[in-house]
Structures are given as C-alpha cells and as structure tokens.
Image (cartoon, rainbow, N blue to C red):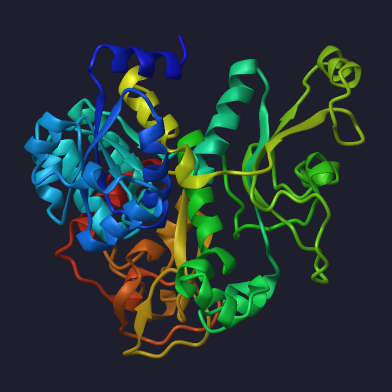
Length: 465
C-alpha cells in the first residue's frame, strides 16, 4: 500500500498525522504551500522567532488567513486550524504532536530542538542538514534509544541521493558512486557574500529585487553546502569520501557514468563506493549542455556479462565499457517534497535517509589568511568554507601542524566542524587553505551542539583511529 493511500485512510478516519514545524523561512514555506493539498495531515503548530514573518509567508503561499489564527495548540487541535507562535518548547512538549519538522537552518539551535523532541518521544524530520553533518550519527543513535525515528528531509538532495542508493542496493547493484550536481570552479571556494552574485550570473539589483540572501547563496557557491550534503550522504549510506575533498569533475548527464569510475578505469574515483559532486562548468568556465546541476545521481556496475547485456538490450546509457550505468533525477523540488518524509516516518516508521556510521566530516577551512582575534562567520561568509574530509582525517587534524610544538592535548585535536564555526574567535593565525582544528578557536562549550559533537567524537573515534 502506498503512502498516498495510507494518508487518505488517515483522513477518512479523522486521524491525521499531527505535525509541528519549527522555522517558517523559505524551505518551510515551500512545505507549507503543500500542506493544504495533502490529505491525512494536520499542521498543528508553527514556531518561529518572528511569528509575523511566519504569518506573512503563510499568506504568500496562499493560506487562508483564518486557517492560521488558532490562539493555542489546544485550540488548533479542536478546530483543525494552525497555531503560530514563537515558543518552540511548547510545540515540542505538547503530547498531541507526532512529528517535529526542524526547518530553522541554524545548526546550533537545531540540535537543541531535535534533542528536546527525542526527550518527548517525537519523531523528527531534520531539514537543517548542517546539524546532521557535524553530529548526525549521534543524533540517530539518540533517536533509536528514545524509540523514535530521525530522518533527513526528502526533497533536499541528501535524502534523494539516499533514495537512489537504496534503489540500487535493493535491486542488487553495487554502488560505484553517488552524489549531486553543482556549479563549480576551483576559485569559488574563496567567494564571499560580496562576490557571490557575479559568480551566479546575477546583478546585485536582481538579487535585491528577489530578496535573495547573499550569505545563504554563497554557502552553495563556495562548496560548503555540497560538502555538508555529501557528508550527510556518506554517513547515511556508508559510502566513502575523497581523501582531500570533493573533486567536482565536469560532466554532462551523458558523461556521468564515464567520469564516476575508478581512476584505473579512466574515471576520477580513488576507489569504488564513494560520494562525489559533478560540476556543470568546464574548467574554462564554459557551461555544459544538459547538466545535472540541480539534480542527483547514482552510478552502478554490472557485475556479470548477463547484466551488462541487459543494459545494452534495454538501451541503458553506460560508459564505453558497457558496465557502468547512471540513474539520475535532474531536478529536486526542495521543500515541496518534504511531505514524503513526513508520511514515511509517520506511516511506515521509516526515515528517508539517516546516519548509520561516521564516515565523513565537513571542516571549516580558511578562505584567506586569518589572524588571531578575528571572528569566524560560518557557512557562506567571509572567513571559512566547508571542506569534505574522511572522519578519520578530521579527527587527526591539528596533530601534524603542532608536532614540533609538542603536539596537542587530545581535547584540542580534531577538525572544527563548519556548523560550529559561527561567531567563534580565533586564538591563533590560520593560513589560507588550512583546515581549522579545535585548538585554533575559543569555543563556547556550554551549548548542547558543542557537547554532543564532542560526545560523538569520543563515541565513534575508537573505531576510526
């Protein structure tokens, strides 16, 4: 029985899935646009730092004003309307809420919201993949201990990639590589909010007209978001990551099975079974026709001549050897697709992607020479970008740089996660291109986000080092 049929049954039984949304920005608004069109769900409450902005976004996506005027969560439950407020704790604690959709985009706050939801035995669909990137494996373990489901958000590329990987493995195919697309040139890692629009091909006036956030868009352009999302995929699927960051090989859709092969077979992979991101630009900046920039893909291998022949007989597009085949979705619809996660979690008790191991990390890396006393400004800013590294390599960062100084204490070693590199002061200089470690910064050690990250390192490090 499919999810839509199950939702229809819940509607017929007047027993809807009850949802609480934390954060009603762009991603959340896209989900809100679909809620009135989805049977069997009741968005009971929205918590946002600015309830007035949340109300404005509801109006923008077409909600009837009366639908979001419930004075309390209890009133929303009685009337079928939605309560909009700023008290996320009341939302999480209310016993009627089945699923919390975390959609703030703030990784430190997201960890607080997610852990509080687990404590109240709530399932969580986590849109804030930045949080998953630095502590997802431990969040998944905490969810299992609480007897609830923790899930990545369908519609965002990591969950869609996980879906393709699951398809491949369920069919019996070995996964050679999987990932997403991106517009990439090497110098983009130095991009700042001041330079982002030129690299995107927009004027500042066009960006202002559209109300576009330069820091958010820069996090995509400078490679931070592709690294974050690739980290989530690697940790959810068990795929390996490149030893020194994403390679971004340029390729059209037609050429993906050609480039996503091992190096010894003419591709770019260090070995089979890795994540990678395909660039929609040639090295000289030329746009590649029929690109995968907004999509996702998985490359599989025919292990026998019979399967290889089947690829040929059914005109599947492969590499020249006929053994490697790529399945892809050329687009993703972001928040418009989150309902799949909500339904899967509520009705099947299954996540649409969840960390199963700690294979990968995304580490804050200097965009320029940084001086002691400077404040890091996090993802998409002026100071650092996110670099994808194997978790084992991240754990060892700092030791080599400081060997001549007697080494670091164990609590100072390890890469600084990009998600925790916001409003953090540097305590020593860092060269351009160098990945930062804990010893480079003065951390606020009182946040749950910092505490759970360090707990994850302690928990998972013995199997990695």
